[in-house]
Length: 162
Image: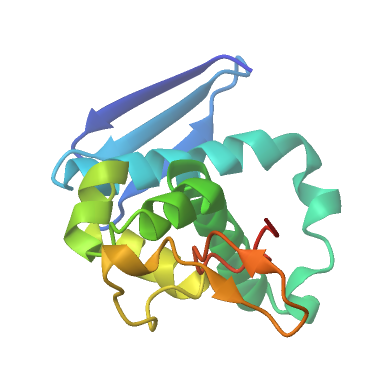
């Protein structure tokens, strides 16, 4: 599956992918978009390339017979892939747990757009959580059974018993 990706002049879309007659793929990313947006678009278009050979089977049940709905669902799948690729759940939660809870800082850390980072934080359930002082990340607390917990990362994981 040879592919060529380039940043170029396209209008009205962030990226586009198409297969040439020789079987090679060509992805063009909008040169007017920010670096973070271009990276997201490349991940999105790459998902289209990856799924091309299984497209008819993998997406056959989407849209319930409505091609517009099916197309929107496929685009959301590609967006989710790009977000997961650029901002992996474990890495985002680790950064959040280490006190990096500012959207601008996280977007910079993962080299994504602010919009993509906000959506990812919403998806991961982190956007509505109050910011916590760093001192609260490591605390000991007694449970009803008397055991102690050394870490409280608030990452949606069970605490590790000491």
